[in-house]
Image (cartoon, rainbow, N blue to C red; front, side, top):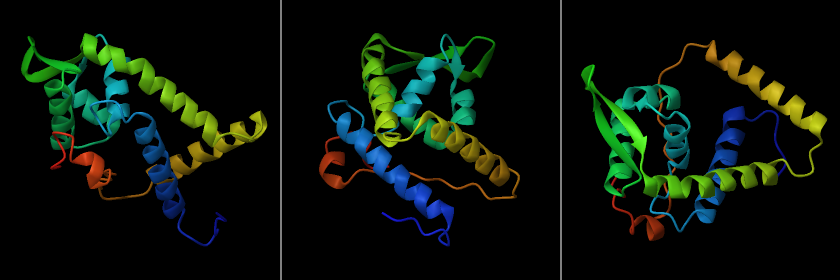
Length: 167
């Protein structure tokens, strides 16, 4: 695919995101989840304690979306919630032993996908790429914007087998 420099950058980033998430989902299709792998990794990497609100803030998602995802993780036994004894409105999130079992596979898959994405790119080019990407993000973060939700879902054939498919 040849990139048209006159096209909005978001078009290319969205296309790449769709390809990347689709490939990760294909590689992890034996798990009980079809997306939100990074959410599970984030909970894991912020142990021993992360609240549901902190998770929403880190992922820059709204409370309702975060609640639904965490609720699904709880139903399938990957995560458990505990009320914060100091603030009963706050819920701590913990990875269960069942959830711990899938973390290495998810991390390995992300690492493999990153290697695939960066194949044939020199270390110098990678360093430049990440510096440029960081600058692009910093530039756009300075702009006024409305909050949007991007939610890539799998096609119905796989989704029909998952309990939270109605989202």
